[in-house]
Image 1 (tube, rainbow, N blue to C red):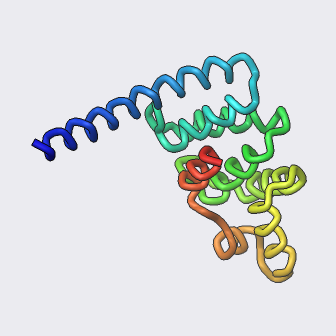
Image 2 (image 1 turned 30 degrees about the horizontal axis):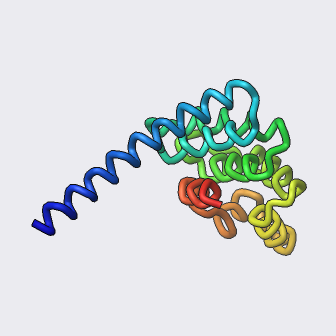
Image 3 (image 1 turned 45 degrees about the horizontal axis):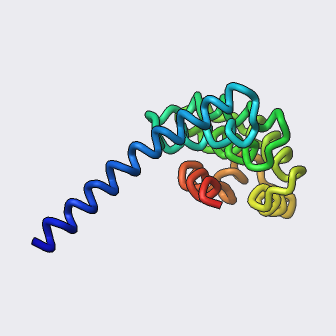
Length: 148
């Protein structure tokens, strides 16, 4: 009997989480379309990890770009990682570097650490530096950033 009760609670919790994730996504998306930068960032995170919606990296980058245009500090770092790693988008080291610089200027410590390593390695090409020093998994970084 205890196992059945426990199983019921677990299944109910999972179902509630799924409903809440979808509701959270819908709520963030509605605010994102109205120009709220935090919701634009959250919508990007949700598309990055498939929370409340199917995973879609192109849409994630779109919403991160909207948030970045409004000065969001984490969004350019996530964009940089996608371009650096070529995660479901065409890799572009120059764009990655531009977004790392934007993120650093906005106080993103991950971007600063990466760029400090890059600056200390004068002989490395940007592509090699990206491979050597970068990057955390963008999806796990998005989940971490969302939970902070």
